[in-house]
Length: 298
Image (cartoon, rainbow, N blue to C red; front, top):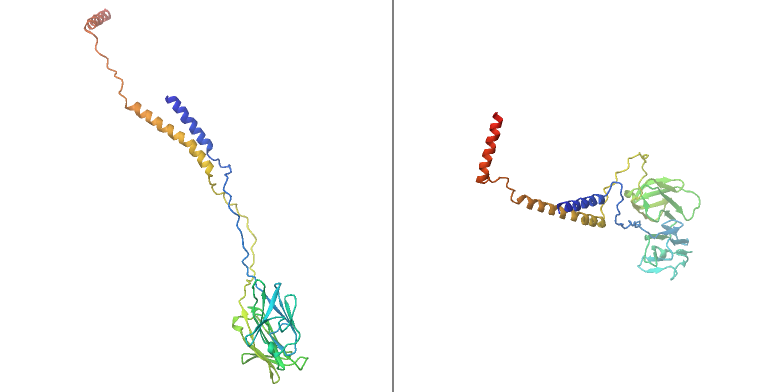
């Protein structure tokens, strides 16, 4: 019985060793869901003004356009009324609005709104009856960009000397009527105006936004790197079950062998003491010993 148990345990041990994963074997791993990358970049509705200016003379024409189609342009007058293009003012087009003759009452806030409810920046347009106006960016300007200002006269078409102001402080004079603010920052936000001779323009607010662009950095050439060591493969549930099925008989056989050996070791030992011979035999034995002794002496 012991030989049969030994053979069974040996076969189980060999099967368990053969099931062990070799270094070159490939382990089946559970499939993981592929990563999904969502585009989180903001989508902004934009409004453009042609010609680009926040101030216009009475009688000028202007076109407002939206970059999302279809969209409507809404005007909120200074008395609080909100009216879409084509409802008493402007000529609606393909997500645009054309105003061929501006009146003083057309001053106010304008913006685009798509059918999905996405709105653009709100821009403030001023219609003036003054003889001088300041042409400045109607949309916010990003930091570190240059801002161009132009002082325009309604009565003179040629270049003329103009003075430019930030608030009430004079910031420069130009004989061409143009002035550039280099590399603006958030501290440059303010009201700006200009004057030609004795005529003064109305003030316009210039808004500066933080730059979202980062300057490019120099890239170093890639260096050769040793490939990373393959991580220890994970065991699949099926392989774990196979190991358990093979290993359990091995454990059972080992326990049986230990039990058999324990029972065998605890049994009574075999007595090796020989009982003394009977009385008759003892006399014959003495005679034989005496004869052998005498013969040896002779």
